[in-house]
Length: 211
Image 1 (cartoon, one colour):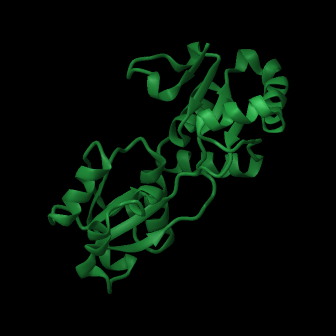
Image 2 (cartoon, rainbow, N blue to C red):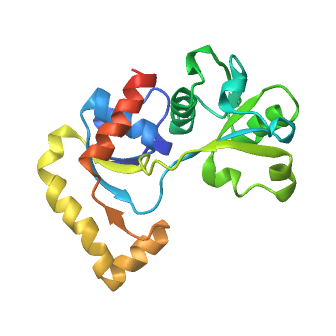
């Protein structure tokens, strides 16, 4: 059975599925808790974070926001993990920040603009698609370019023998006219094989802030 992570309910046992197409955070949970194995990842489709403040705070640096109120959409997301990671990397202790989760990015942005938070963690590509008015009211304090947090197609441990033939079949789609149409219908340009060092870095971040 193949399933998208978006179809899973809160109480669904992930291990019952043979194939799951998962967001980076959920992919890490599947690998860590259920020993799922990554098969392929879409080309050029990573999750990155924009760390946003109000325009009035443009002259400040990361360390000026010690113990600040941070708003973001959800906790179980690599946007949140990357935001925390970048804070720590730039000298702002993420354990001392006060987090609020609004459920979606628009309400998170409104919380920042209304003065109910000092900093916003937002999916980078979504921030740059905001209206000009919203972007002019805000300032990008920092942005990630890790190239690590891909969505992934993963296979359950009991079906690991199918990993290589499945990988090859998916990679071959890019060489076939019908396969290219399938990829176009899926909204992706093609598949890549996940690199071990990138997977290890992804899991390190997940284990550092979640496990």
